[in-house]
Image (cartoon, rainbow, N blue to C red; front, side):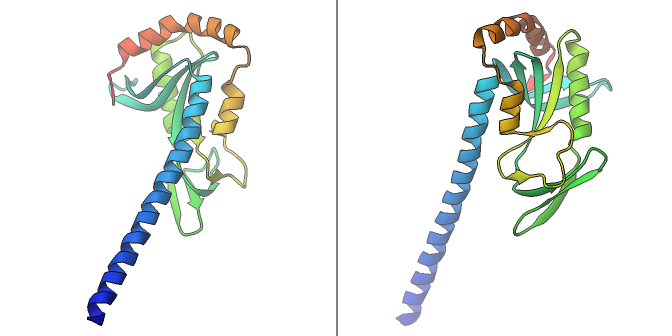
Length: 188
């Protein structure tokens, strides 16, 4: 009988721990997602997620987020990592060190340059910029590479206080936005 009770207690404890882990992961994802959605709503007058456009080599490029802002078009490549990020413009691989793990990923800047070039090929008269956006939880202790920002920096760079003036600028970009949508290969 004692073995049965110990087995039930162990199963119950494991279930509770699993439930707490899932709840923590959902909370962490939801909290970061809310902040991202608030910032995107503040700076973007239109947006497309998962846009696929042709590239110059008869291939295609997928764009995480394409935003229509008062400054033109903005391509966002989003990285959701937790920990200290070591990367620079010239490094081929960047490293993330967190409390319990270390991993590397390819420098995202070259792919961002390709995305910008592909969009510029379609809409030549509109400013096109790109950013590698690190969500809350990433920290650059040795300097931040170019075209890399956090949500707060993105809001500072692309937010507009004068919404009426911003809307007039956006209206001038809308024909180009529509041209880009027509040339898209599809949305994911």
